[in-house]
Structures are given as C-alpha cells and as structure tokens.
Image 1 (cartoon, rainbow, N blue to C red):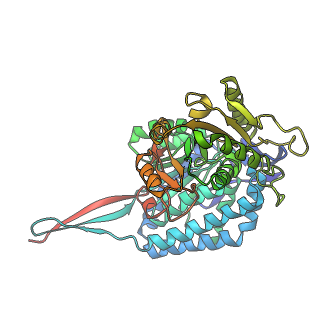
Image 2 (cartoon, rainbow, N blue to C red):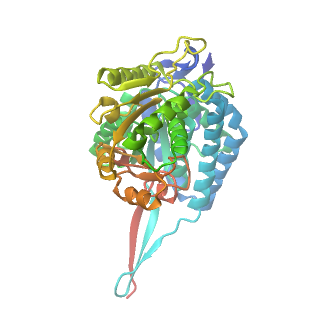
Image 3 (cartoon, helix red, strand yellow):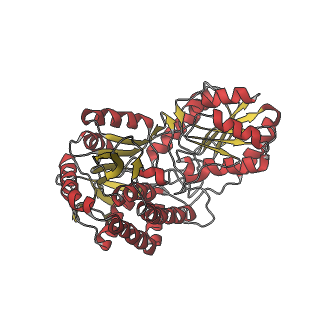
Length: 479
C-alpha cells in the first residue's frame, strides 16, 4: 500500500489526528494508497506558513518568480510519465489522455512564466498637473480548492497563476484523486521553492473547504467544482469579504442546424461525451438537433457511440475508462433511471457492464437518449458522465430560447455551414465560450469561465491574472 503525506512549510507531514483514508483504483475497485486526513489544525499550519512566506515571495522580482515557474515546468516534464501513470491508476484516465494532460500542465507553467514577465502597469489620462497609474499587486494568501475530474492539471493551473505574480497558497485537492497533487509537492521540493509558498493539505472538502473559505488568514479563494459547493464557498467567504474565483458547473448546448456537416458534428459530439468518461464541465450536456436532420443525426450518433472502446485505461486501444468513483457511477446511473422514468427513449447503454474486466471497476457505458424534453431532469441538470441527451428544435429563434433556458452558462457550440448564421448565434447564446463547428479544449491562450451559475471570473490566458492580482491606483500631484 502506497503511503502519502501532506506538504506544509516544505515539510512532509501526517495529520496530527493520525487519521487517514484509502484511495481506490476505479478500474478494478482495489485500494492501493493511504492518504492523511487533515483537519482544521493542518489548515491553520498551512495558512500560517503561507502568510509568513508572503512578504519575501511577493518582493521577489517578476523575473525571479517566472524562473521558478520555468523550473517547475522542466521538472514536471522530466517526470511526466510518472505522473501520467499515477493518474491512470488514481483517476482512470486512458493512457493517451493522461499523458496529454500532464503536458498541458507543463505548458501552463511555461505560459504563465512567459506572460507574467511582461505584465505592465497602465498610465491613466487624468486632467491637470497630476500623474496617475495602476499597479498590479499580489492579493496575499490564496486558497486553491481543486476538483477531482482533472487532478494534476487543475492544481497546476491554479498554482501557476497564483505564485508567479507573488501570491502564496494553500492547495486543497479533492479527496478523490488527490495523489497527483501530493506528488506535486515532490516537484516543488526538487526545485527548491521557498518554505510556505505552496502548501498542500488533504481532507474532507465539507469541513476543510468551508474552513479555508472563511479563514481570516486567506485573502482569496479559487474553487473549481459543482455550483452547489460554489454557493457554499461563496457564503463562507462572504464573512470576511474575500476575493473569489469560481469555475462551476455546466449543461452545455450543442446545437446542430440542418445545414451542418453531420459527420463532423457527430464525431465531435461523441468525442465530447466520452472524453474523461464525460467528467468534464465543458462537455456537451444538451444536443439540440434541427427537426429535418434529427433522425439521421441520432442514427449516426448511436452507431458512432457503439464503436467506442471502453476498457482498461492502461491499454493503448482504450478510448474511455471508468468514472472516478463508485459515488459518481451511482449518480450517473440515477440520472439514467430518471431519463427512462420521465419518458426519454434510451437507445444505447444504461446498464452496468457485466463482462470482465469492466465488471470489477466503476464503468458506465456510453449512453444515448433521444426524444428528450426540455423539462426533463436529464436536460436540466449536469450529469457529469458519458450520457448524450438529444432534443429537437424547429427554428433558430426557438433553439436560442431553449439553449439559454438554463441556470448555467459555461460554453456552447453551433454547427452550421452558414458562418453568418453561426456568428449571429454566438451573440445570442448566454455562455462564456461559444464555438462554431468546434468544441472547447484546454488551451492556455484562451480564457475559460462561464456566465450565470457557471461561475465568476476567468482562468487561462493573460485574463487569468486578473483574478489573482489586485489593482492599486497611485496618484502623484506634480505641482
């Protein structure tokens, strides 16, 4: 059984309580690691370490901090295969996807190092003999609460943006899939990051996340996860009026107009629902297909989804592995049952696989529903699994109304050969990212974040520095 420890003030620590929890391989249901279960005492230690580290770290030159991010990128690249294999075992990523996401994490550290070096202040045009400018400064100690669906990548993007501009941080990964975050501490140790700049603690989100969010020593909270948990964090953070970045849920519309290239739309749609076994906030949540092509789209979609190779994530032929936990599998299955009970037509999947080796792990087969109605639970709530919900629409005006009829607004895609029509729809859709004849992908250069209950603020791009810095106005009377 592998043993892991927390990383606090550049020291490896067990929980003071000595409590632990076990980690399960989702592909076979077997326990393979033990992790410390921290409590408020570990939070206090980590926050105290980060606060003591902040003055010296924030006073380093931008060039010095950028150099550290480059060093972290180099060390991650050197250990890429080690991290990829760990995430296959811990999360169930297929091998190719796991390797790709490690490289995305490397590029994020490189990108932030490249961009942060050129962050500049703005001179403000004010009347009279007065000189004024804006200065971008670090916020202080950031609480980085990462999700379980993309462990290393999620931690990497939060840490990279936070520390490169002078913040120090406390990282709290999800209890499911926390091993890559803890092993990331070894990278920080190797590059010689000063004590307290990054601290990594593990334990229940329900208690540690809430305590971090309300902790008076925390200046900013960045959280990625469900909208329900985001609301709880927002409430906890309000007691001390903290800066917030929230990247929350999505029920993303995938709109296929009658003039679309059906083969390309189907290929992208199937790829979207099986990527990371559907455990992606940006995956297609609602397929809206125009009536004239509805039956052909559904037929092509089912045939394509049948060909998806589901299996052992270590096998290079596997396209989709298990979902991350038994809890997540059960949640997805409850949504499938809801769809059946409410009258949607189940065309594919819906049953737990019984054949070896899929019978041992937390596998959910690709599932397709047609004749889905707007008011059904599967059309309104985020399933977070490999389930396609296909609805009909008649006109452009109708589908815009249906697509916007959601509490979420993370992303959307439109499929059409008429670029004028596609661009017109991008203006009408209420989403943080709208794609024409494409779908979302993790890309450092493009901002990511949603509207409505999908969150507050943006990650990635140069825009991502806005949420981890604060602007100070400096004015000088030159009379």
